[in-house]
Image (tube, rainbow, N blue to C red; front, top):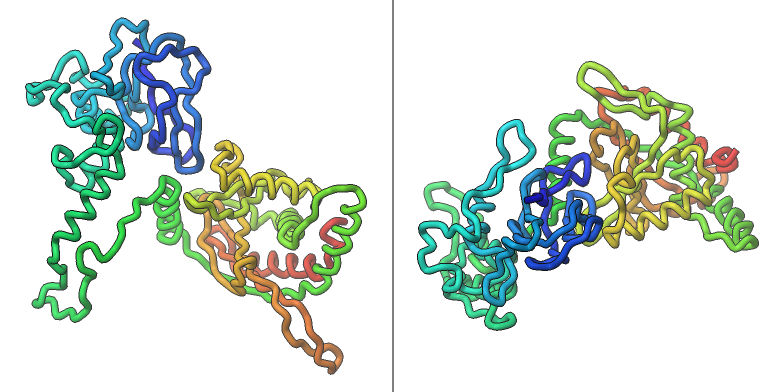
Length: 426
């Protein structure tokens, strides 16, 4: 019987979360049809069927986090289809077996659990028909929160317990408990810990969880050095206005200051290839292509779409691609290959009024540029006080791969390009 296994949908993926099953037990399936939506560390992906047949079992319900290679369902000819009453989800024995399953050492696949729907587990003598009807996600959350699902009143169809019921039961239990957690008196700490129920627990999204691990690894392993420079972008803003006036005559979209900055970074990287590198133990990898990542804030966390061969693209091409990928990043519609293979990242918080900040390097890249807001400042010009627009950028570099002098030369080149913007496009 063909197994549906959790696929590897990105180069950094270790497991995936089943967001929803689009097919249910007993449904006919054709090769190429979408079976489920999977949340990876980078995007929402569609899981397609590789075989024709009938979805006979769902081994991992919605909300389950499953390691790659682990079976999550079975496709057959329909003769072994198991449906429990009106609930077309996986029976309890399979759920328990899946929660206990772990990848075999050295093997990406996991054997199908021995406890199947047609072979009830010994401790389930009452049978699945006596179990409280609940969605797989509700059961998962109940187990995490320590809520006895048998005591929860279901508000779903037919009295089915759903996620909202579990969360309500947990909140009610916390409100009933007035025990305040404080530091032990022997510790000598006078700072009280918030009382139970005085906070809200918000589970991390897959993107946030993976980002936390990767950025922690980056800070722990890569010795960061930071270099900041102030750039006079008065002429850059004027140049951008001229470019947009020209593009308006052709009906093309506008370019932003950030688009010009990205192009300038690409040109500077072409001139300074020693910055377009990755640290690899006993060697450096100097990348031939200049592929710039652009950090995009999304409701699910930070995503970094990649603009490939950015130095070969015009500013208007960069602008169009940046807008498209940023919008699709927020909608979780980017493909995995559109977020992989970056060699340098630009993170811009200027639109939020942030004038200066430092960013954490996105491994395996060796550098990232943090861009602040341009502000009006007073400067001396031939003894006269004038107002100029000043932009501050800070480069974070992996000192194992990039020396301070090399990073300084790169910023000097970038500053020269942005202060003489015609050089960006020539």
